[in-house]
Image 1 (cartoon, helix red, strand yellow):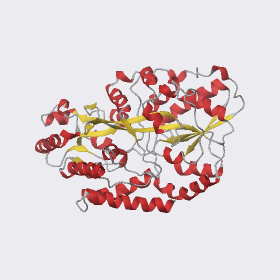
Image 2 (tube, one colour; image 1 turned 30 degrees about the horizontal axis):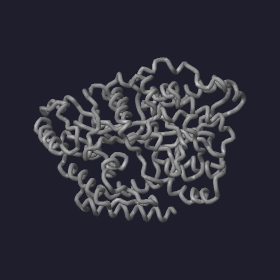
Image 3 (tube, rainbow, N blue to C red; image 1 turned 180 degrees about the vertical axis):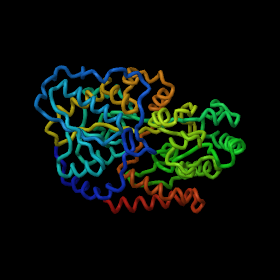
Image 4 (cartoon, rainbow, N blue to C red; image 1 turned 135 degrees about the vertical axis):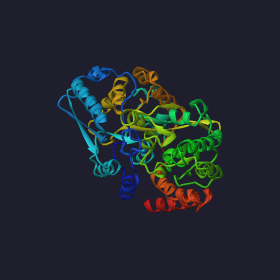
Amino acid sequence: MNGMIKKSKLSKLLALCLTLAMLFALAACGGNNKGGSNAGGNSGGNAGDSGANTPDDGGSDAGSFTGRTLTVGIWGGNDQETAAIEQLKANFEAQYGCTVELKVYTDYNTQIQADFIGKTAPDVFYVNGSMFPFFSTLGVMDPLDSAEYELDKFYPNLIAAFTDADGNVLCVPKDVSTLATYYNIDLLESAGYTPDDIPDSYDEYKAFLVDLQAKLDEVHGKNQIAAMTYNQDLARNLFILQDGNDGLIDADGKAALTGDSVVKNAEFILDLVNAGVWKTPSDLGLGWNGEAFGTGKVAIMEEGNWVYGTLRTDYSDINFGVKAMPTYNGTQYSMSYTVGYGIYSLSENKDMASAWIKYVTSVEGETIWCSGAGCLPPRSDAATAMDVESDPVWKVHAEMTAYSIPEQLGNNYSIINDAYRNYLPLAVSGEMSAAEFLAAAETQANQEIANAG
């Protein structure tokens, strides 16, 4: 990057800003949507008292930032997340003799774009993985050197999630959350099943869930307990829909939802819904999967590791286990929800921003942050240092990282997702077929994309 926001890119940003204010939502660890990918609870790893340490990976620069201030753009989090980033801040300030100012946005994607326009963005800032494809087109982040930031230590699919169309890595991942399969042991046993009976493949799910639902109805009363929940959102359906030869967007980033394989995959989802074995939390009169599972209203759910803290604190009487996501058409999938740090291209403190990223994404920094925020570290050596393998829940989620696909769909993810969510309920109700609802969603999305352009 040349350190300046080019006029054409700035014009594009201005044109899209109002639309994005209503469309984009935070969805990765530390976001603000509990039913999506909000991080909650604490890591099961052995972080110990690492929060008392100061950075040990930048000694040659120690004291070189005395009297200077680094601004870091973040969004608000829960008490645990706040404590973790405050610890990172204190450690960094103690090591470098500087001041770190945390700029906490309440409507992150909208407000930071306004700062891009005003050329007042923080020196270093969060970038949600779902927003990265769009942000990467604005010229607001500097490319990062792979060796300097030890990018070879990070999971390759997470680095790919922050790589632009020209092959430049613009952000270093700070955390990741993944989906895994949670099951209620007591409910399964009440229906005559064990956790080992849960299929490892979606190919076998319908027969299993139909039988499970019938036995749950018999034991607990009809429609009292659901066999499994699902979400009507690309954040959860993306890995199924994208399987096969057809993508969900074309070369220009427009919605392409009517390919044969996409329709077939949507029919698979609808088949489970129509069989009465997949229900949304709202179908059960509840707000999100964690609540439905925690209150014993569902036997199986697919959820992110943020739910672990909720289950331990709010629903501690639930007897549950966790296993890998099922394969789909022979391929192991999960979803990943990741956030990275980018350096503002107009920053006058790039040396400080670089040192901040190196520290907070180091093994020590990741241990402090992820142990507090309830996320997984995006680098395997940090996962080893945190001993995530010792906790069976974290172990499964960590294993899912390598198989996960990021919550990304080009520059127009939110627009396409909104259209998908608008029309999927019409297919669920029987008013539209899979092909019809996908065609309608594609049309709506592409109209909005054209208007935004």
